[in-house]
Image (cartoon, protein in one colour):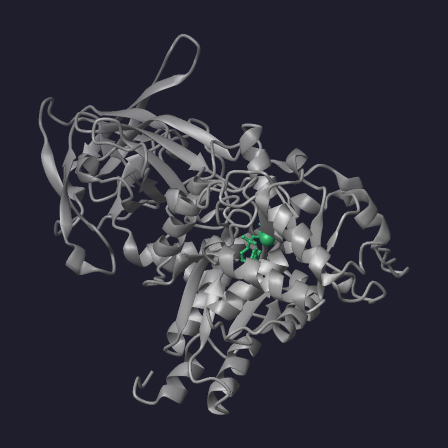
Length: 570
Ligand code: ATP
Ligand code: MG
């Protein structure tokens, strides 16, 4: 990138998807001098990977054009919302790498102004208080094929509407007794225009406004006014809001608001092998299938953070999925490959043994230790080297030894040789078993002339395995995570089969007695590493400590699901 010519760098940057094209055109034509966007989550759960797409789009476009993006909490339903969700949303957006400066807002900041807008509509005769029951309102609304019917209260006088609405606000009525509705068109082919409800009575304590209000604005009403009050130029949302756009525009046309934002819809990000609905994610937590919103298997931003996914990998992933109006299912392997690519560059290498098997080197002096050297990163010499102690007793992976090996098994076997990474070639001379016939130890001899890096050490054997010195090893708990669901579309089962029946029973496996090389004593919570030959791991940011090390597997080195995904390409 040249960095000097803004048009060329913008063209090379995240690419010109159709929204960025509209934005660029609006700047070029002078329709807007500044681009203002917003990300408007409802604080009724944690953010997930789908939200990451919306965050990257809204904050990304603002940053690319020198504009502004608001983080707005859409807190209009006190029954479902909670301050802990607000906190988690703030945390997740920040962690993902975005900043809203002084533009953290809440729909509830605007409650007085939204209320004033309602009064304006009533005075203009375009809103009325309806006293049908919720069931009647539903029945009168009609269907996609049949028009709706007008409520008998539709022609109340302005004075009566003002009086009733004021008494709703003062708390004179029970929940559901009255609502405020827009007076648009009960015969409209678009159901959203059949006199939509604007305000309802809800005697609930709001996490920010307490009991100041007992009437709360509906989403469409609050959202449109909030957008306009913040001077949003482009209001970007997912396709399910396409049918709401006429209402959005109707409200903007009726009300004397400071801006007329343009709503543009794009398709949701749907990720295979998971679900991204807050309601379903909450169900997994309630039923104990996962430990919480930040369980490392959850597709939440908090979960992926705890899993060890780097924020740059998530941004990269979102960018690669593009912005379109077509619905499609994104393969999990795309996300995992973004994670691998980032970690391959970032993560220092180390040796760890997940399922330890004891090796005794019969010809190595008892009590002797020598220091071998290992590079911390094969492509980044600036990350330096570390010392790795070597001694008579070692741990290797149980899998790396086979008493009766299959063909082409190049690891340790009776009578066979293998190279120890950064160390020596060893040869298996005896297999020790317990009474039950289980292998408990493997006895080997080492070849002192084969130490890695020594001249004359070039003797080649086919296999190289990782290991840890038993006398110096750190014991750790390692959690091996895999996909939460075992099918690509857990929420599209035949005959409405419950999505939970597709949970992957092997999504969490505990390796309780792992052995780590001693250099890992210095690992801090959140640090990422590649355990050679095993995958990428992170020291758990909540539970890891120097005295009780706990690691999560972020992702394996290679994709073991590729075949299944190919077979199920949508
Ligand atoms: P859910 O269906 O998971 O409960 P939601 O759409 O109700 O999500 P909101 O908090 O209302 O969640 O969403 C905030 C913003 O994030 C909205 O603008 C919404 O369009 C966007 N968003 C939500 N899910 C996705 C997704 N899967 N892909 C892209 N954007 C999304
Ligand atoms: Mg929503």
